[in-house]
Length: 132
Image (cartoon, rainbow, N blue to C red):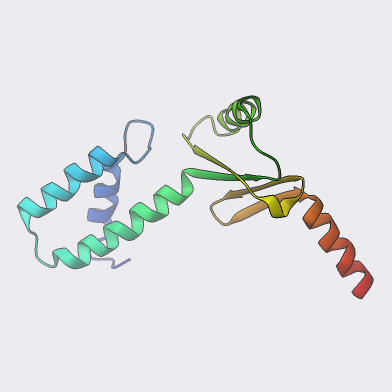
C-alpha cells in the first residue's frame, strides 16, 4: 500500500465496519458516496487501495467449510457455536458447502490456512508414502 495513503485507507476501512469490526455493505456504500462527493486528488489510486484492503478484511472474516456430506442444521449450528467460541473477539461469517470429492470428512479454510481431515486427504497421504 502506498505509504502516502495508508492512514486514509485504514480509516476508510474502519468506517466501512460496524462496532464488531465486520464490514457492512451499507457502510461501504456510504464511504464510496463520500469519496465520490469529495472527489479527492488521485481518487482512483485511493479507490484501488481501498478495494484491496476491503477484500483482505473480508477474507479474514470468512470461514469456508467444505463437507463430504450434505450439511444439515445440526452440523451448521454446531460449527457456528464452535467458531463463535474460538473467535470471541472477532465476528466471522461461516460459509458451508458440499464437496463430493472429499468422500467423507471436512476442509476448513480461514484466510490462507487450510485444515482438512477427509478420506481423500488420507488416501493421498497413503499414496505418497508408497511412492517415497
